[in-house]
Image (cartoon, rainbow, N blue to C red):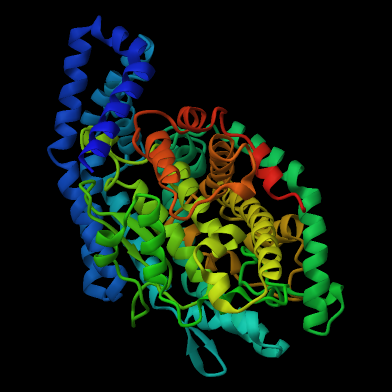
Length: 573
């Protein structure tokens, strides 16, 4: 263990020296600028770690309890954090410092990167403190309503897992429609507050000099909006034919199963409330692999086998359903000191195996494995998309035949190996295709939402669903279905990072296959293979946030982020 730690620190030093040498040289020629920047970092560190930790713990407790008093603590902690970030005098000092550092070519130095990240944090909060408080009040109210909402289906209150069971397993068309409509009912509960939230976010962004909130959020998250839109367009072009082929196969199977014509299929026939994951059209049901299995132990065994154990994180996590608890799943780094936790609602099925591997993919990327030798501000993932990329890669494994076999799940199931391999490949490829189209909807809807929140958003939503997902809208329906997606409220202008993460996952997967399996993905063994863990740790995790996401992508995979590897991964075999 000690040798691994020493090796990790040494790698970080090499990376930093190689990557930042020119920037450091530029900064060293201006001692006054360096002192000012260091003063800014010290001031930020005098309060940010403690308040970030306070906010994280408040959110964790509220997400588990759902109690009003706990959500009030979240709001109070958020207000306190935002009040610090909204200080206009300090922001001007930060802005001036970063502009000077950038001008002399020092932006890529460790100090310059810290100033950039501090600048981005302050810039999005440059608003009247009362406006920020109103945003936090509304955000807490909306999130609480999402967490406590249960769909009313024939007089019964059903949670998300129960809704999915109906959509995936019932042959009663009317019941599936009621379940789908019930799941969308939360949109009507939150839509008014959500629109008020959108307008307030836009107000802050425009006052800060941006076109709207989406424009601000992208730029302050190190994205160029125009380049991102082009990347999404390129991905659409590269994968549209593969999607249409897969969609026809899915439609034919679903229509047969529900005794309809293909043209009569509607949103509730697609097994997922948003058609963000692919319906299982295969006779082999991978859920059976997990009957009576301990998903916690499977997750622990896998990560231990690649040299990135998660047992300590597992003990602090909340993994099973309970009243009032958030029905979703997430991973949170509580303090950048190693306290990393996962919230989940485990059921013994394929979906939750995917989710557990995904969330603990985040967990191993967070600061429990990022060297403590890095400065606090750089002690995190390079970007949301890179941590999503590692998580997405791990989440693919339950739909990768060799992984299922190496984890001894196929042998113990008594099911036919070739059929499981075929089903796993189909689910993985269809899942990637379906998800890519869903993110196109989310990305383009949020663009339209923040450009004009007063337009007919219901129509915008269903037009995009029909164009990119190929799903016909329900006749005569005029309801805020767009508002039923929690991310629009609670993780605004974020969803594209999931898809960029999938692109990152594909590039990483191909890079590992090139290094360890002569480029053959099917020969790349993940189970009990510490080389996988070492690759992830040395190429992706160890650098922390010392470089931009695109530079890290090139460092880890040899190329800047692009859709080529992803497009290969979704080609039908």
